Image 1 (cartoon, rainbow, N blue to C red):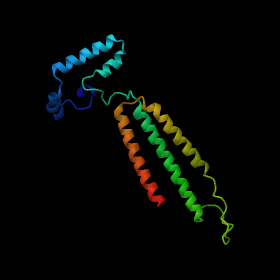
Image 2: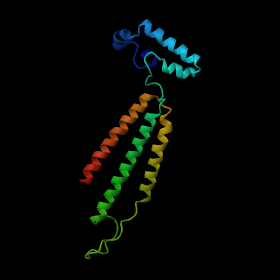
Image 3: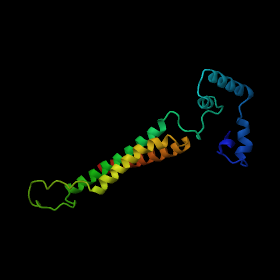
Length: 173
């Protein structure tokens, strides 16, 4: 099965030594085919029956039928975008409070607070909107890819999320 999916090379030690030992016995194969026959007689979709009764279970070469991982990847991407926006806005507010912003300092000696901070630049707003749209669009794209790619994307998004949270927390201190 691993050789068929292209997960391992045919001439590797894994293919010659470990994989043959793992092969299911005849009773498991007979039970799987009997289950497959029963489900087909019930009128289930043949592709679904094949996936449900696969001896090794679903593989990472299949798409995620539950759609949980694509939604998780999209949600993590959106969370990363929002954390980036939040930290950027906090940084701009701190710079304004310290008088480091690009706004002119008209009330330098007075007790009144300075002018309101400038609105976020157009480039930042457009980039944020594009990244939000990308996070939403990543969900239908992720439903079409193999699960192994989803695992990679989710791992990458989780690592980015953890990194963003760490730096946001450090910046807030």
